[in-house]
Image (cartoon, rainbow, N blue to C red; front, side, top):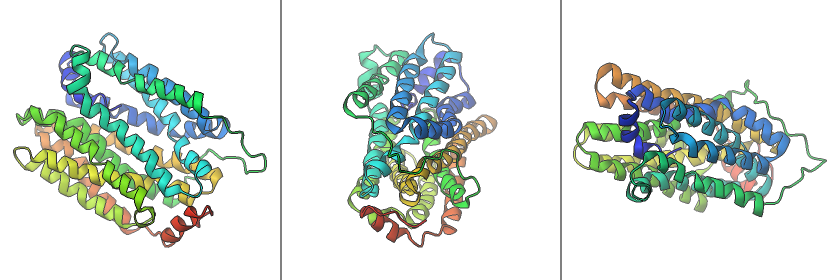
Length: 377
């Protein structure tokens, strides 16, 4: 998915897309993560997390590789749509894997797979321009195909090395339809939505923003800083899960950091965008890990996938609308900095949501999960 931002200027030029289309292209897979999250929960409940992962990854690999065929805007958007469906089918499987395979180390296991997701975000943004594009003679179409190869290899490795585990016949039947009446589901999902809108919006608009401000040489290092800086918080969560996971303060810190980082990104001259992008990456990584750990910590095993699916649905629906609104604001005003306004408002919203978040059993939940017990919720 993040093989697109480094080649957005070329796609913009070749296909004649406006800023609203650029925002939609970057956030279209995110919309599919919202639309297909609940069907993904159903697939996990019926086929198991391993098979759901394999099916989703194969769809991601095939659709992602074919995005540059033509090249055609219609095919690019259509296949990006299918690729998003593949990711959405896979995502609810991860918290279920954490709960089923690592019940005594929920915080650690969540941080480990979050690190895997973050490394997958860092590699294409950091290596597309200096490594992949020269290998494919500057073709953005073939660069997208090249980044689908690791996805295909991963699906093959899971099928080959990870055995299918039959469900325990005495365990409760896994439920897949989310409990939309639970206010905590909405609160968790909207907190996640704020950070997702920030993350996808900055990846979408940093390249064109820096080109407009005559600093194109900063595109690659700024995107790399945004994505690489997410790793330290997830590593910290691996080392100190009880201090970071299951608490309210990371969300309060995250909202304040979002507003400060975006102001610095758009207002400061020279190479300062690289620094502020790194600050936004730290904030994004911290909130990302802390939210992902909540379903396996707070839900019974049969409910993890459906709680995760509900959170992903809310999260990615808002994450789609954020970049779209940012692109529309840029087109309407002609002012590049307005593209980042939704992320700034998201910081305010996250603070308000976190102030009303009550996790009185958070420390005890992490402690019980580390001992393999079911936490209170």
